[in-house]
Length: 166
Figure (cartoon, rainbow, N blue to C red):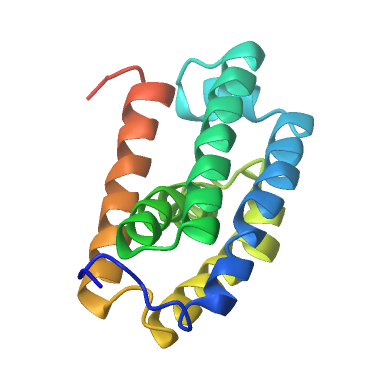
């Protein structure tokens, strides 16, 4: 067994629970779209986002999330778990932080806040806790995945919403 492999007996709950992440991603995107997130980005953040761009980006993000989830679930390894949690922390946990922060900062409801609070935050905590409890990732690797997720979220905000403005 290499250092990247996960023992077959460990991680069983993790491999099941990771499917909650794409399951809560879809209602979040529906909430954002139905609540006018692209318009909110333009009006509140001064960014540029079209409805088409929103849908195309989120379809790509969902495809990547589904692929990483399937890999971590069906071919478990420390690498697959690390990459999944890096991507998912950016798209779920740090997305929750984004919606909560922008709602408070701009005193304006951030479309997507409800599902971020009700789904993203608790699912992120649950999956993270189980990953650590089952030894799927060591604490340092988990912290690195969450930090990479923060970087991914910042890049998405900077590139996607603000079009590389500083």
